[in-house]
Length: 248
Image (cartoon, rainbow, N blue to C red; front, side, top):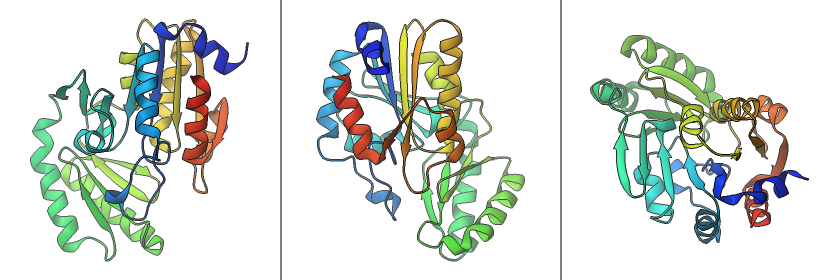
């Protein structure tokens, strides 16, 4: 039985987890311009009605995801610091105490950060984007490293960006661990380093006897380690959408 057939075989106990940027939406120069591919919102509703769990697990704030995806879809934002499940919003309680530190770093980045860096304020975290100015990558990393040491925030690297998060033990893997509990099968589709913990969560599920499928989205700057760990590869967000349509 192939990977798709196994995921289809018991839909009520199958969980489908999806990244947003680079998976459902093409990577764009300005983060605020990202949108899901045409037809993806409707596809998500079909998947949600078919499988036991359908969840978006993203580094984006839940508010951004909710503005562009159907209200019925389960959302986990900021790598698990925020969520909206069955329309009920929630924040990780340990992250709230770090909001002032995040705000201070956002202000500092906007006033004296590397020239050309785009600062994305996410409420409980922030991201420094340098996709429009790739030549400032080293300067951005040096600035972000210093900011993390001074503020106590945790630095994470992503595609052409640097993320500063509260030092709270949550990531995409902890989301998958929690939401896939009791499932007999699970799939995760992603394209960046932040998706590696979700792949690790699927490995833990597989060790416990579940059928799992790790799908990497192949883009020009896809993370090599993610590609190496994947069971399947698809070509860009269009390939991810085709994979999901095949699931149905």
